[in-house]
Image (cartoon, rainbow, N blue to C red):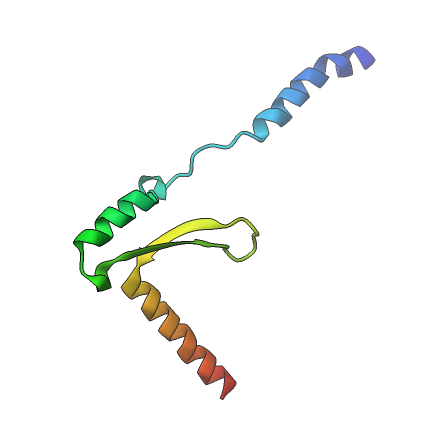
Length: 91
C-alpha cells in the first residue's frame, strides 16, 4: 500500500501542477486592448467625440485592475446615466 502511494505521489503532484496551467480565453479572444501609441495615433485622426479613452478599472469582485478602452462618447453616456440614477435614488 505504501509503495502504491509513493508511486502515485509524483503523478498527483504533476496533475495538481497541470491544473494550475492557464489556457487562453475563448470567445472574445479576437479582441485586444490597443497600446497607448495606437490610441494616440487613432485619436489624432478622429473627431473629439470619437476619441478612445483607456484606463485601469477593477471589475466587481476582484482587486486586479484591467485595462479597458472605450469611446469618449460611451464614457460620457455611462457617467450621465450613473449620475441620473444616483439623483433618482437620493431624491
